Length: 123
Image (cartoon, rainbow, N blue to C red; front, side, top):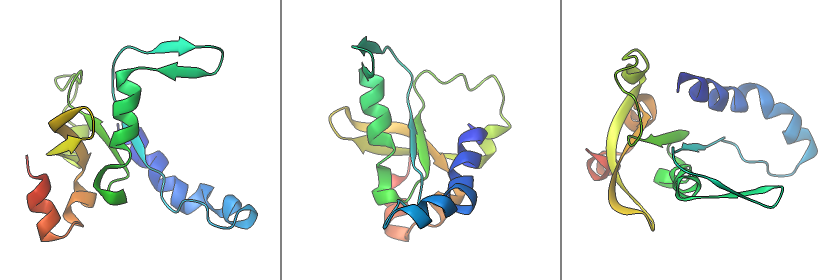
């Protein structure tokens, strides 16, 4: 998971320089959503599945406040606790999926939220 944090961070500092020269308003922040589950291929270029829908909705969490988020479901937390120190578990509704879902977000991004938003996302 730490790799996704690095990718999102490097998007702003390194990758975005070239698109800024080519496009009028490229996105200023790369957002990622990660979910695990079954995927079905349709044709040669399209994939569908609940986990894709969840990942898509996760990358839109918090009105762009979070770079990336991933669900607790299917996560092997016993593999290593090192990465877990950088993340905070929050409870948030995911449109069309569940009323409240447990999701990991970066602690540094959670700390930057307003007090009202922090209360809204507390697990």
